[in-house]
Image (tube, rainbow, N blue to C red; front, side, top):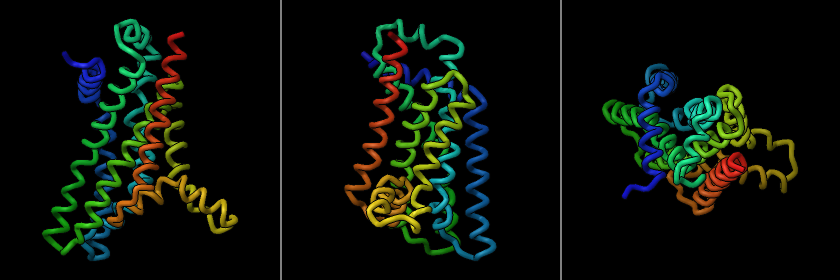
Length: 236
């Protein structure tokens, strides 16, 4: 017997790929990343993915909330979430199913960028350690930002508000370490640890540190648990 979370995931994936939003957001993402890659390739004469990975946290801060903004907000707006909650499922089942569907959607959006690796191999000699680290970091970053995105979607019925809420949280976590030069050392260490960008950068260099993995796992779990709690409060 299939778990309720798996059934909800399949339902969400069907809805996700039958609508235009996923295709529009993915197309814009690939156009943006393609410009970044081929600008480096043609203008700077370097067949590498360094610039792509350096800007990926910023890009995912924008595009992941765009993918997840409807996941709860739309159902809250039309009232179908109430019907779903009357079925023999728990709030954790619903959040798990929607989270997994959203994460799969994000990874599907990322998958075509592997074409850049093929291009770099044909026209250059890329270092595969940083490339593997970059994609591993992208998976962890996507997992965390997806959890933030579904949390933002769960707190409002308005998809635009959900998008901006998720975007603001993600962009703050991405850019918080860019203002460190003016701060005391103790605060610098704290903000560096909070920064998603610093942990992603560490992994993308091919350095697998347990602190980075714990950070992304904790961030994902925090916003996942917060989303479950919100759904439980809505049911009361």
